[in-house]
Length: 288
Image (spheres, rainbow, N blue to C red):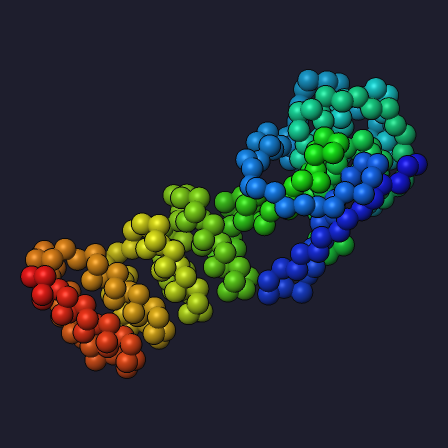
């Protein structure tokens, strides 16, 4: 068996003791991972454990048991082989069409799954993602193309459902990341997610959710903004005040209501909020 070179990149999740490692295996030679400009993902038709293809007959024999891979292949196309390994192991395997149409002949008997995939894909560049010592995903590239790529954070490839679940748990940093991702994706549920985050127990989460939503034009009701002017966090109160003032047209139907709210904020416990309220009131009266 010809050994390949491994370059490991270790990623430690925020607020978590679990350690995830991403290893890059490059065929034949040392290949440092170099930064490159962002490019559109080539895996628009990537394989997941639940997807199948009927283009070719199934591989002759593939068995995954207790983390060990056994297989017998005789001139089998890689696409269906990787699909079957993915289904039987639970490991997500993403590959390009140029990889899927290659034919392979190989026999393996009870080898660790990751090592077996290395042997099966020894003429390719492969990224392996391990979490808590367990292989979770693999990305397969043509030879000599993987070294110019960098791993991307989970928010770039996680499903929207996965990101939405992150809002209800995890660390404050993870919840903030989830809000930023949903708003950036402009999914229908982003408004609801923002409203939930505005009630988060952590002040940093509430502030970031409000800031991101206002910057992206996510609709936040007047009532929600008014409630935030009573928030325990000074930055949240200040930002909510500015949002209400900027969102009220001069001389509009809610001018008197807005002026009354600004006057209330002039009695805020924080000096900066009081100063901001005074400046906003002066500006509106001068403009009117």
